[in-house]
Length: 257
Image (cartoon, rainbow, N blue to C red; front, side, top):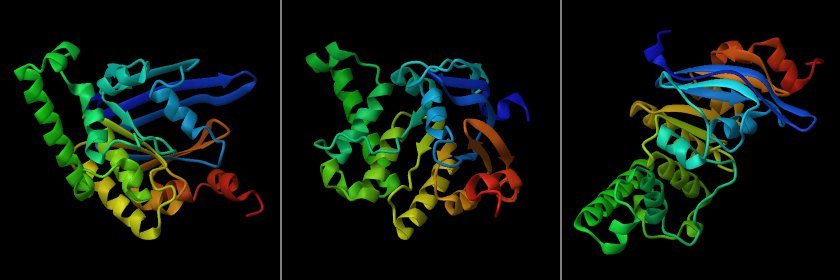
């Protein structure tokens, strides 16, 4: 694997909370354009790993490279500017803002006009705001909810709120999109639509890192999968390799199975 093919490389990441070792020497390499899955039983450290990557937690140890350059997870807005966007297990939308406004908020991380330009309503600021609105509408169309652009986020269905979160994350122009259980609470039809959406996102050139409890969805969607258990990697490989790994079977089902 050449350097140009690697989107994210993480080596030796560890994180401790008091006496709890949440992550221990975790290393992964994600190629450009992959859908890369992270699975494991409850409490395996998956969300902690996401929080370290995206700057919510500071690691105790570890080395990070993003697109071949050293990367230091810090404040979330700096992580977004570096090219990583994420969603959360629990939906975090601005409930009283419209769907369009939610996506526009995400886009503002890429703006050039400062607060003064916006207050004085300079021509450049007006043009930039129009561009932000146009791009936000394009993303709502892309995820399939453009018809709800003026609806407040809290009045959207659960599945459409998930799509809106993804649209807002895409508004930051990420190189890597990190999704924390995007299918949680979705019915079978919504999950099929989500799978199609993620494949289309990958086709645009965005690399995807995905946590999901729906193992069937992961096995049919991901190029490669890492399995965590008690903060350690117990398996890594293609879906076929992972689902037949004895350590994975024991972690999920217990040794008797």
